[in-house]
Image (cartoon, rainbow, N blue to C red):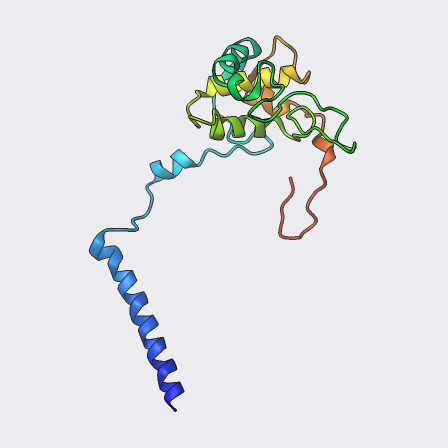
Length: 181
């Protein structure tokens, strides 16, 4: 009988704590809903098909300059790696005992390169590059890998149209709740 009373007291206490937490939002002004502008500021993901790529464009030439200024300290002068990952080469090595995973050998979709650079690079100042500079650095890295020509200018349409060498190297997720595009 004492055990039953203890369980009941615990249940009542838990309900009271939940009610107090719900009232704390009003009392202390914490937990307000995010505004549409705040959500938009974080809703910057780019689909593998290029959906949500922003306006702008960038050339390989401009990308070379931005890369030299912002990226070489970690990735080396030509993307060969250093403190940061190697970005160039590795084509044909994925099935070998020592695969080299780079943008040119491993990444399946070019728009995800733009997404990653925009979100995470440079490492000491993520999201600090303009859209034009992100397009330019993307163009430069793709050019270093021989995927786009040295005179390429990329924008949302042309970047989404780039077919990466390893696009068919991944398998679709067969789970019924996963929507592969």
